[in-house]
Length: 602
Image (cartoon, rainbow, N blue to C red; front, top):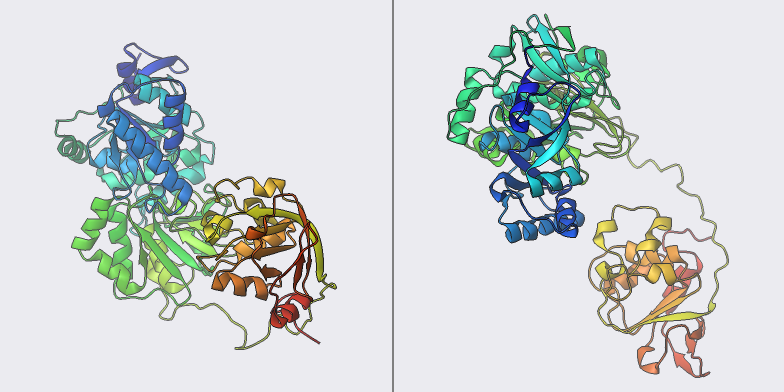
């Protein structure tokens, strides 16, 4: 009985003949952990007292957050760096690009090889006729430690692309047509082999685009039989002559699916469901706020060039943001050398470091509530690329839409871009003129004190910048002081009515309002310090949060003692009955009593 490509690859790495449904241990040629998940892989290995099977086949790739701009990602990356140095493991750091692309371009993976990563799109390796699979932290840790992992041999579906697309269609449109036909679970649990009249003529970039979206169809992997160009590419990248693994003529397939792409026109996925695919013409005219070109699906040089050919000599529509992220640093540099970056910058685009971008929170390509984005990514699930709505399309359609200000076809870009509608200049907001209702505010307080015997407590210690995206005051309190050594559990212990007492220059550092609002969120009555940072002082006063200037540290107060504060008399009564003068100005009192600077007075 003949074998499919996936069966042959798994058999060669299991050391035995295999059949669909069988579970076998397979040797993994390339084992990768990303900055997303990599720290957990290292932890799993350390916690279980394991080693590394072959450091030469083991790699970290930092592609989810190439700027390390999120502190949790930066922490994960540093954990991986430390672990890599400890075990002599290679790293493609934040300047390198997407790990699956690097595996191909750097010759780590070749036709017929096996590759695993903490990347759900590791099946991109099907573009070169290799086995690639995304796996979780435990699986990857096992492959790091033992060089192998168990796997269930999948049955194979044969996909035949019938016909020739229209000149306007791209590889992205082909895979969207596949997704439309197969749906979100049409390849669930299957490997696929892709054939058809046009397949041999598809270049590596096109194969990567199509292979990458097998995940969105539920597939294990979509494999292309390598053509000569792919074999030449992988031979050069790896430094060895590579050979294809091909299916036998009598290979047994679960089924054969024919997909008609004759005359195929540009396609788009509507928000929320990658499989909700329609002709771009059906959604043309939709107003957009942003556009994104990049991702593991469309970050190759050919994608960049397709976009540049549309953008050259044009401008991004006013009010629209175009974000472009090449897949690897080599592609980025080629864009520089061949003038594409100048085209992008001249048109008004933001160009980012090589990496995954839009799929990772905090990175280029995310959008905000109500924002409509057109993207070359592979996923547009709610919340995946931000809080707005995301349409998926080809680089050419995305570039054309960015110029038009609406979703449009490349041959239908209007002479004048569509603009956002606006109200009349200076028109008041619906709430303008309304007087805020302010409850009568107390001027006398009695409460338990927390004595923080430190000077120069800055706003990052009070409320760390990793929480700055939180906008609801009710959510802020839980993070108060969690970056102040020894006080990390303050928010759990504090109770409404408590009073914070501290030293000099409280609230030094940044201008963040959250460092005031977090105390309001917890119900802290007031903060007393010997002195306050200048901006912090203004922020507290303007928000109507009472802060009193007084030196209580030298008064010998202890945690849990009670004090009384009279804002009008500007006095603080200690547990001993002794009174100390505390500064609370008339300006502070006026703003405090009306509930904050922005509240209207009678």
